[in-house]
Amino acid sequence: MLSAEHLSFHFPDGRGVISDVSVSVAPGEMIAVLGENASGKSTLLKLLAGMLQPSSGKVTVDGQPLTHARDRVGLVFQNPDHQMIAPTVEEEIALGLELRGIPVAEMRPRIDQMLQHFDLSPLRFVSPSTLSGGQKQRVALAAIMVIQPHFLLFDEPDSLLDAPSRADLLNAVAVVRESCGIIWTSPHPKRIPAVDRVFELTQGTLRAREAMPARA
Image 1 (cartoon, rainbow, N blue to C red):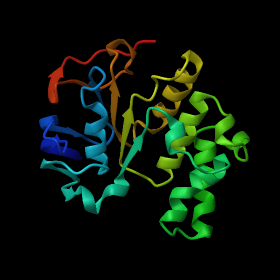
Image 2 (cartoon, one colour):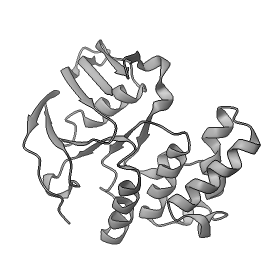
Image 3 (cartoon, one colour):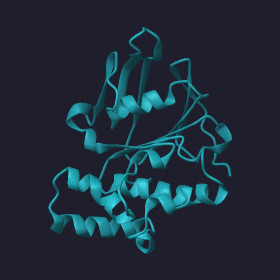
Image 4 (cartoon, rainbow, N blue to C red):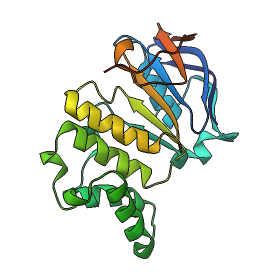
């Protein structure tokens, strides 16, 4: 379980972005967080991923402090270009393993599995910069899943995608949905996938609302 308890975040000038937010997601569960631009959605995800430290409250993963379990949480950004630095798809997927000192003999089968899992094998030696938006998001997802996280956070991942690329991304998400807990943020209620629960973030405060079916 990825859990936030009474989470708050304030900028150094005292402006509050997140105010007393409590939320949790279990493996195999998918929830959506709706909110307008500047409502705090990205800040909330960065807190849950350990990229920001809360002003108060705490984040835990399976009962452990997030600082002891950050590898269990992966964050997919709105623009995949912001998280890609390697010259080829294969190297992008390998990067996280290299940074963690995984032996080459263990890396190879894990990389091959991700390439196959997300239908990226034909793009193994292609530069990520030449790919479509949907393909880039699949590479970003593969680069996170190779680390074997338990939870995935999606920061408006389809907002820059055309219809075919969005379908491409949703197909990739369906592949990992059963094995990971997922939080998906969006400003558009009609564009979220089918989820188990829906929340709305307004002025830094999170409240539950009725779940809704997927829309095109």
